[in-house]
Amino acid sequence: MKIENLCFSYFDGADEKKVFDGLNLQSDARIICLMGPSGCGKTTLLHILAGILKTCGGTVSDFPERCSVMFQEDRLLPWLNAWGNVVLVDKATKRIRRNPDLNDKASALLKELGLDPAMPISSMSGGMKRRVALARALAFEADALILDEPFKGLDEKLMKQCASLIAAQGKPVIVSTHSEAEARALGAGIVRLS
Image 1: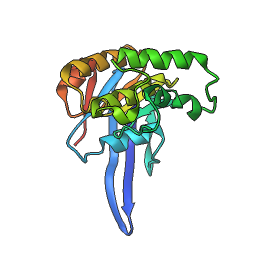
Image 2: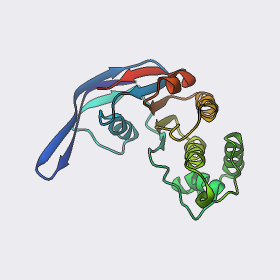
Image 3: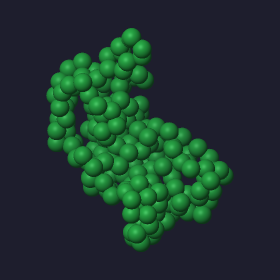
């Protein structure tokens, strides 16, 4: 991934808050962890890479355009079960369950993450919901993964299990985290923002 002279600002009425003013980054690592204090722009950079936010200047190269995103918030539908939330990626791509392999993949991912596919979201703990959100991101057929604090609410054993599953995907991954241990578990290169 290569970022050159990236500029981005938020506007609140007449006020401008610059987040990036000529940001330059380069990493050859397949898995990259963005680290830095809260408010330094990690989530903003992930949203720019995902195409959710548009920059006011600069370029991003050597990173796939078709990305699967796991947001900082779980963004699950509470009236569905775990499986129903994971197969939503099919609806997002307008195929609406025309992909029978996704049905099996969703169940397999959830079981690998220690979850019952039939369990209602409304009955889950925060860590369980986080794993459902991860399964949904992994189920989407994308060329890269963008994960915003994917291990929030997980104990060390579950974090390592999830990190192993993420690393096994064999595609570019960008993760935001505050934890060196999470970066090590992913075998990631670290990019520090300040």
